[in-house]
Structure formats: structure tokens, C-alpha cells
Image (cartoon, rainbow, N blue to C red; front, side):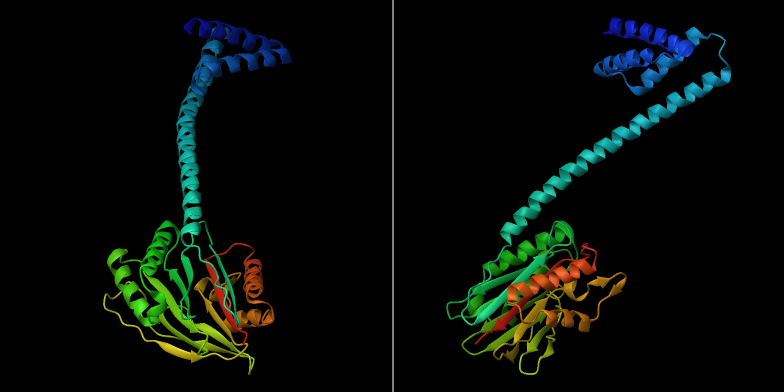
Length: 337
């Protein structure tokens, strides 16, 4: 190997001298071949510069001292540059690994937290949940009880990324252990609150709304843990009615209790659940007003429920230049009979 390097060193010196004297382009072609040979031998850029310095000193022994010093300066700069480049390459590789792992985790989360919209005679259900980034800090869930009761959960972790996603997974599996269809909404939240308070970091907390829709009685029973207010569009008056249920967020107090609210639902009424990624959409630097959100929903009010939520999402996605600032979850239920 040393003999090969020595030969290439001599060849480099000759090529350099020839190019200085003639500016012959063939010398550049030969230089490319030598450079490839150096790469195969893992010759570093700073070693090539040092080779150039030695060649120049042999060709021109009377070189100005200032030139020699400038080349030494360039040599040191190349060493520092090479070290920084190695660090950047390492960080880039680490980022690629992390991105790949997050992508796998996001797909797992989507599978684990996935829920099917139940098919219920006389009830049209639409739901959409889109993460602002790869991991979703919002959660929604449907259950169907043997007595026809429909359970609807919607939650939002105050925070983003992997910690928020892990909290959502905990909520999901805690709920799976409850006989939801036979538990009142306030009891579901009280049980979840104890789980959250014991298991998540004190700096994190979760807002959540849990509701039961009873088709046979045309009633909606719900409880809220500090979650965004929902709305009911009353078909008879064609007006929106805010559903502001009070309750402390999950994870703050171990023995928190929750009040249960009951609302009568009439034919063609529309029940709306959402997270703050919907109510706090932005138009530039300005948060939208509640009236703007409700007017967009009204614009699509006559569409089937799933088409309605998709159109509302597309409207606000476009408004934000297709860059969501927060996870977006919207659920609507329309009583058809």
C-alpha cells in the first residue's frame, strides 16, 4: 500500500508541474484517476492537501513563506471541516434511524388505536382524526353496547409526539378493561382519571369527553374532563347549541368526580365532538372564531356525516396552507329517525 501511495505521490507531483506549465486538460483527467486511487486507499482530504504542499515545495523550493503558511492554514481548515462533516453524517444517520423508528411506531399506533364507526340504524356517524405530525396526540373511540347504546370517546393529550402517543395507548387499554356499555360516562372518566394520575408525568394531562347515545330514548348522556365544548345543530331552529360540560382534566386530582349531563336529541339534529386542533385552527397568525368554525360546518350540513367531516377538514387544511399546527379530530352524529 505504501509503495502505491509513493508512486501516486510522484505521479501527482509530475501532473501538478505539467499543469502549472501547460494548463493541459489531460492532466486534469489523469488527476481524476489518481484521486479515485486515493479514495480506494482511504486517503483523507487533509492528506491530499499535505501531498500538494510537499509537491509544491519540491517543484518550487523558493516559495514565499506566506504561501507556505497559507497552505498550512488550509490544511488545518480541512481537518476541522472533515471532523465536522463526520459529525454531521453521524447525526444524519441517527436522524434517519429515529425517523424510521417513529414511522414504525406511528403505524403501530394507528393499528392499536384504530376504531370502527359502528353501523346503527337511524344514526349517521362521521369521524376524522389527522395528526399534525407522525404521532397522534388525539384519540377517539366508539363502542356499541348490547342494549343499543353507542359509546363515544374523544380525548386530547396536552403535548405532542411519542409521550402523547403513549398516553393515548394507556387510555385505550384502560378503557378496554371497563364494561363501558354498562358504565355511566362520569364513572368512566373517574376510573380513567385514577389511571392517568398514577401513571403519567405530572407535567402532562389529558382532556376528554365521554358520551353515551341512547337511540331508544333519543338521549345523549355525557361527561367532560376539561375538554373542548361540543355542539348540537338543532334541525328545528337551524341553530347551533353549545354543549359546555364542566369537569377537571384527567391526571390532576386522584379523587376527581365528574358530573353527567343529559340532552334530548330530535330527528335531524347533529351532535358535534371535536378537539382544539379544530376549534383553534389558524388563518395566518389569527385563531379562527367559533362562529367561523360553525359556519363551515353549516356549509356542509346537508352532506352525509362522513363527507361532512372530510370536507370540513379539507377546508381548514387548505386554510393553514396544508400544514396542520395541531392534531385534528372531528366527530359528528346525525339522528335520522
